[in-house]
Image (cartoon, rainbow, N blue to C red; front, side):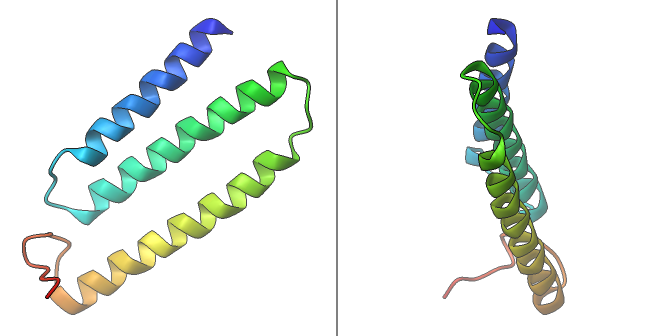
Amino acid sequence: MMNMSFLVVIMFLLGNMIFVSKHKHLLITLMSLEFIVLSVFFLMMLYLMMINYNMYMLMVFLVFTVCEGALGLSILVLMIRTHGNDYFQSFNLI
């Protein structure tokens, strides 16, 4: 159980490192966010199994995760349709 939680913490830190580092593409940023969410899901699952609690909260978390992923993909598609690519350099916020 301790090895599993250590692995989940390493997954979380790796996802945060990828998210914080400068990347050119929006898709890589969205994938790192999904990796962070996956590690948080595993951590919640381990914790809820450890205290012998119901897993209903995981279903609520998965619903919000799917909504977050769909919103990210819609932003990606909108950016590709308007600018032709998903580079942050071609996207001007002003």
